[in-house]
Amino acid sequence: MTKIFLVLLSLIAILQAQVPKILRVYDKPNDSGKAIIIEWRDEPDSTRSIVGYEIYRRAADEDSFYNIGFALPLSTSYEDASTTDNKDYYYYVKAVYRDTSFVSDLSLPVRSYAQWFHKRRLNVLVFAIIICGLVIWYTERAKKGEKLYVRRISGLDAIDDAVGRATEMGRPILFSFGLGVITDVVTIAALSILRKIARKSAEYQTKLIVPNYDPIVMAAAQETVKQAYLEAGRPDLYNENNLPFLTSDQFGYAAGVDGIMLRERPGAVFWQGYFFAESLILAETGHSIGAIQIAGTTAITQLPFFIAACDYTLIGEEMYAASCYLNPEPQMLGSLKGEDTAKMIITILFIVLVLFATLTKLIPSLNNLYLKIFDWFTAQ
Amino acid sequence: MRNQLPLIIVFATGLLVIVTFFIPHEPFGSLEQRFLVWYSIVAGFTMLLGLDSLVRYHLIKIRDRRSGWGYSLVLLSGLFVTLILGFYSWARYQSPFKLGSPFMYLYSYVIIPLQATMFALLAFFIASAAYRAFRARTTAATLLLVSAVLVMLGRVPLGGWLWQKIVSLIDLLPGTNLSGLKGLEVFARISDWIMDVPQTAAKRGIYIGIVLGGIAMSLRIILGIERSYTSGS
Image 1 (spheres, rainbow over the protein chains, first blue to last red):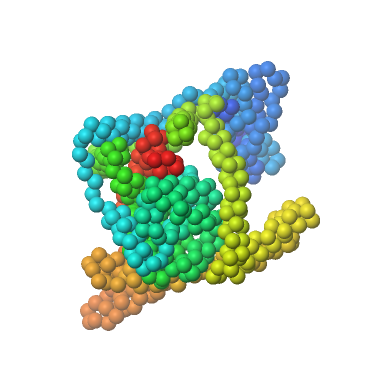
Image 2: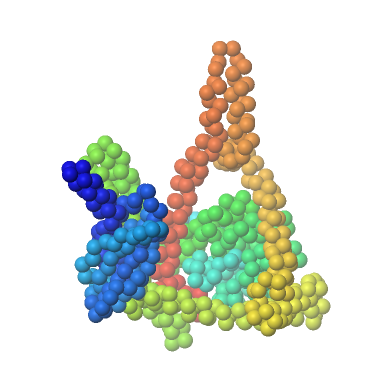
């Protein structure tokens, strides 16, 4: 009798272990609504082959449950992205084996709703406010007449020399935005450099060629160059055909620009914008024709190639500083100073957090606090 | 007003995109995606602008018999042949991208090999640029040369082979037994350290600068301080 009782007890235990248990059913946080997450725990029977989990749902105004999705074996959660907001839903999970299935208990009612603030992005908001506040504060100080120092950027100082050299050699100037599109901030930064170069080329009456990869960038470049020629008092020199569209194919563009360089043999070449694998193909061709080359990009992977092949390279943020450097109005310089101060604050924060992380190894009780800080800083 | 209107549009749009980043609730949640769709539509139409520029530029070159006009003829022929084959494939096979269609034949056997050829040139350009960059003329260039050689040795089988030979040679000295060090793959370890520590540190430093510079630049654009993208002064 005792043996039978024990066998029955262990059978119940085995069956219970195979039944998935719903842990949490909740509204998906920080979303635009219409989504509920179901989390469960299951210890599948190792002697049987599990196929997966079926998720069943019933709305408060419905009579029966419907299968709304399937999760693979070893899954422990499912996102139901087909709910109606502010409506009660009930869920259960069915563990499906090849020969049988086990059903969980019913969940408590849950509703989905949209959030008005993404709480996991609070860190971004705090830093954005600090950085914007600094930029605006320094801009206002600069407007009041405070002198702000900007270090020399040799790549930008060399623009006049490069344009002058091309003029003396009687050769044109070539400017390329690379594969950047107008939504890249670096392309807009490159436009301000183009404006300066175009103005100089108009003053020196040197031909400026700008082959383009993107038609929108081409239109913006044409407007910029036209305006620069107008400012220099030489609108008659502006020729739209010197700023043609080539192709929107990466290596087709590289081949096209290489061809222009070999035929026109520019005296000065400017690579300003966003570049990919074609960077070295372009810069080495520029080097082979003996042109003075000034590059600038925010593509970190392409920077070494430009540094190796070009005479001057604007590294990352120097590109963004170019417009302030070339047009040193108080407002521009103020924003640059604000950016530098933000960088200093972030560097100090890095040092403090690195020291704190090291300290947690010596005082393990600080680990929880460190993990909370780490989690807060991790943007979503 | 002609100069002010673009600045007002940029300010309003920039502010709206920032707000949508923090508010998932509709109608803000999907606004960024909607703006991207609008951008795609505008970008699609601007391809016509590009096509117009390309055709006009090369037609003028051919008309005036400027130097290299033959290349322009090849380019325009290629452009129109691709266009005609694309339309033909569309009509004949319901899609220009159907395998076996003339358009896909052109893509697979002309465009891809041409792209691959251009990409392959990179190997030679890397060699010539590396030769110039690694000339040990200054302390910095020497450091670059040494670290580059170590990284290269750590990334190729030759590095492992060389390390084993070095250990074997030292083992020839009387009283030394370094055979245990053979499996250490020292060049690979040095290479990993260079890539993980100094290289990553420098890269992250540049990256932080780029991000902060990007934020400041974006702010200048939104506030109308940066106006280089407009034709007005």
